[in-house]
Every structure is written in structure tokens, then in C-alpha cells.
Length: 354
Figure 1 (spheres, rainbow, N blue to C red):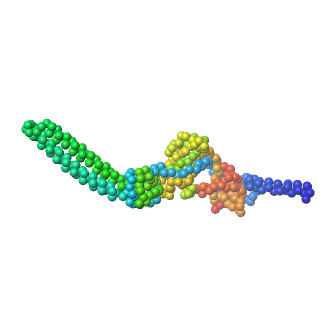
Figure 2: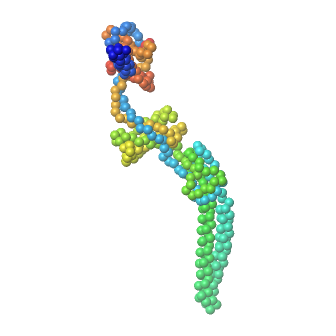
Figure 3: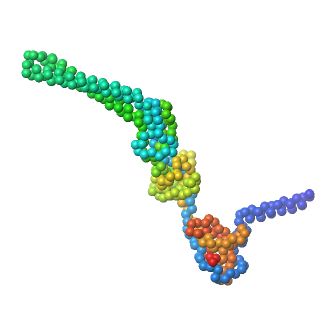
């Protein structure tokens, strides 16, 4: 192939590529979108005429975040003991005061019984010391020569020692009863069990988690928002949240904006309270919708748009009657409206087919 032929082949390929790119860019869509296409006329009775609606709507930027529990509680033991029974599993709902875990109480039961015997014996000695003290004080008062002052002092000292012994024994049994009460672990909140960390036979140790609970009515989305948007958000503002797993939107309220940006991203952590939803769980992915600006969009009733192959058109009112006008449409909204991206202007009137 000579040089001229090679140049012609390259030029043809470039021209074809340019046409493809122009098509993808929508150039040809714009070309078939004139307001005065020479198209067939239709009878004026084709249907009701409606005016193109121009609406200013906010444009939202989305900040990715995670659903978190606002009220989360770790359940742990207050004493070291063997776990006798765990009454709940992950996902169970619990009420305040509901029994969650029982620890083995046999050793503590025996200790309480033993200490009660000590208290009983100490109480008997206290009663005797009190009687002896009263008797010697009475003799010393009526017959001073019958007992000495040292006998009176000794009786009083014995009484005080018995009182101290009884008080110590009583405190010991109270402490043993308190430790015994720690073998029954109840729910401190109304909530749902997120995780279960222990099983019967395991050893419970103070501070080691046994269960994790959260309040499902107190969930929030936590999302990092870039600084230029975060400055536009106010505490108490209502923002929409999209939960991807549920494919649903929730109305949230801004509860907190952490007043310190992340050093790496320069974004601020925004916490948005969410309404209660039985299908919503901590850890779910969500997107916070933040209004950034406004744009004007055009709408017509979806029934006014007709299709011919891959082309869309409406019957637009003109001086020559109804003419076919090609349009490009966008998203269909609630109320039967559809967005018109090109082909119509505010004030244009289109026909609804009968």
C-alpha cells in the first residue's frame, strides 16, 4: 500500500471515530430536537393541553456512612465465677430486668450460710455481754463495795468488743449476699442482643464481655462530610438518608457535628439520628444526602410522552396546531411526572392523548 492510500485509510478511520464520539456525546440527539420540526399536524382534539412545569430542585451530594447504635451496652460479670446458663442469643429482644446470664452460685450460697452462722453466734455473745454489763453496773450502783471499778470497766469493754464482733460479722454476711446477687445478671436496658461472647461452662471474669446489647430505637448514621459541605449543615437540620441494603430513604435529624476534621481527609464526622425501623441494624451502609445547589428541571405528565422505536416525542401546541416534537426524558417522579432533559421549554404546551 502506497503512502497516499495509507493516509486515506487513516483519515477515514479518524472520521468514523469522530462520528461515533459525536453520537455518544448526544450531538445527534440535539440535532433532532428542534422546536420547529416539520412534522405531521394532529387534530386539536388530541387531548387536554398541559403546560411544561419548571421546578427549582436541590442537587444533593452524598456522603457515605455507617449505621451505629447510639445506646450500646456491654454486659460483663462483677465477680469471677463459672457461667451456669446464658438465656439469650444474638438477635433476641430483651426488656429491662430480664434475666440474661446465671453464674454458678453454689460456693457463694455456702459462704452466705456460713456467715449467717457466724452472725448468729456473734449475736448471742453480744446479748450475753449486754446482760453482764447491765448486771455489774446495777451491782456497782446499789452495792459499791461488792464490785470494783475495774470490774465495771471490764464489763463495758467486753460489751464493746461483742458489738464490734457482731457488726463485723453482719458486714461480712451483707458482702456475701451482695456477691451472691452478682450471680444473676439482668438486662439494664430495653434492647436487642448484638453479640454473645460466652457459653455455659466458661469462666466469667470482671470486665470481660459476655453480651452486647443496643437500643434499636436509638440508631444514627455517622458519615464524614467534606469541609465545604459540613459548614452548611446545622444541628437540628433534617436530611435524607438512603440505606442501600433496604433500598429506602429515611428522614434523619442532625444530632452532632464533631468540631474537628479528620487530618487525612479534612472531613467532619456528622451524626444523624434515624427513625426507628425494624429492618435497620448497626453496621449497615448508608448515604447522607446533603443539598449543595439548585437546578431548574422541566416536567410533563408521563402520559404525554410517546415512543417510536428508540425515539421519544410529544405532541406540542404550535401556531400550526399540534406537531410532533422529539424530546429526551430523565427520571420519572411521583405523581406521574417525568423530567424532560431537552426538546421543551417552560411555557410550552403538550397534549395528553385521549
